[in-house]
Amino acid sequence: MSFVHRFEGLTLAAVLANRATSDPNGAYLRYRQDVVTFGQVELQAEALAAGLANLGLEQGDRMALVLPPCPEFVVSMFAAAKLGLVIVPLNPRLTSAELQYALRHSGAMCAVTIEQIDGLHYLELFEEFTQQLPELRHLIAVGQGDFWFDEGVFQFQELMSSGVGRDYPVATVDPDNACFALVYTSGTMGKPKGVELSHTNLISVAAGTADAIGLSAEDRIIGVTALFHLWGLGPGILSSLLAGASIVLLSEVGAGPTLNGIDQHDATVHYGMPTLFLEEIAELEVSDRDLSSLRLAVIAGAPVRPELVEKLSEALGVLVTTAYSLTETASTVSASCPADTFEQRCLSAGRPIGETRLRLLELDGSELFPDGVGQITVSGAGVMLGYYRQPRETMAAFDEDGYFLTGDLGFLDENGCLRLVGRLKDVIIRSGFNVYPREVETRIEAHPAVQEVVVVGVPDELLGEAICACIVPIEGAIVTGQEVMDWCRETLADDKVPDFVRFIDELPRTDTGQVRRTDLSRLAQPEGQSV
Image (spheres, rainbow, N blue to C red):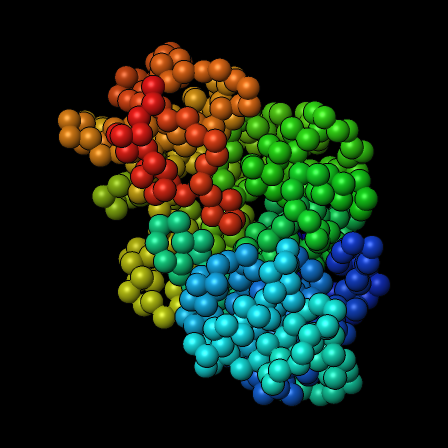
């Protein structure tokens, strides 16, 4: 039986309790030198739930998690599930203003936070804006506890210990309709929106992802560097739980620590974004590692060029699959499988997972005829409940048949695999012709001197929009804009060839690795032309 059908209709609390009963000694979390079992996570979550209930937290209250990857994040998440709380996972590296915005907008009553990271003291940070957040009544600190206990501030381990053996009111939760996670979008196109996700949203997508990549109890997952992100929350924490696998939580991020972690923990499945895998390929060229335990690498989070799949497969010595994910769909929409051909894994984002359904629309909103490029729309158990406190935004995000409008462009090939073309908002209308940036980027990425490229449109009096290629060259490479244009003309129509090229040191990105195209468009204004 597939994971999708096995865990249908359950809450997160029920899924953990079932796994802890059937496999109490199975390794779940691998963190530094410690191994935390499913049974231990269940007991710790029970104790923390009792401690939180004693503070007065009740079903429906919001609890922010401002934590790096660590066992306390996972324990807090399941303690919240037992009480019927709503978690608000937040990037601990947000600016003070960004953090304050999310806490205020979500109405968080409680926050579980790390004491400090890289010299930044979060207790002091929270103290600075507590007066502006009257609903935030409790702060729970993860760390050594060497701080002054103000009223309303508690040490994580002590609060958990206070709940051992104590009863608490177990929540009765509707898994389909009750919000469990309020996850904020990265805000590349404006203010971040709070995406409301139910237990069913998260479990169904995590199960579908586990089915697609063939996850099993023997697997050890590595590469999840952001638990506040849906990929870490779903395919990371939850897919591991559903399959009985374990997940490696790294205290350091980057190519070196991840490759070391594969060797140290005998990891078998490696998740990652293209940027991480590019760094690892470069690292392996100068420093060899024992990666023989790996069986699979999964690329998600950004469009993938075919050359990366080929290079990564060679560097790691494993099969490489791809996935397409969105916050509003609880992460994975489609994924390629280990059994797919190299071309399917290399050129596409795979097929829809589980019972997810895709439909493509013309740019005017009408349904697309087969084989054409259109806006990708999604229906299925993973699609969000809505945007928190934004009913108009929620209504605008769905078509009349209830399909979520992704804003992404793509087409389905002859094998039913989804091929991504770009963003609807990123389409460049040059002299009346639609130019899809991804097509141009794919050609430029094949140039031997190009490390990364993003193609954007900039206002032009004559053309309407001109095409600008923003390129990060390979270190030490010598290449001119004219060479890049000539390279494009070999395979692209003239109206798709960049009008000018801008060379930059690095692409502006969000904390989750997405390219800030709006920032690039500003950088690429005519006065910054470089050919």
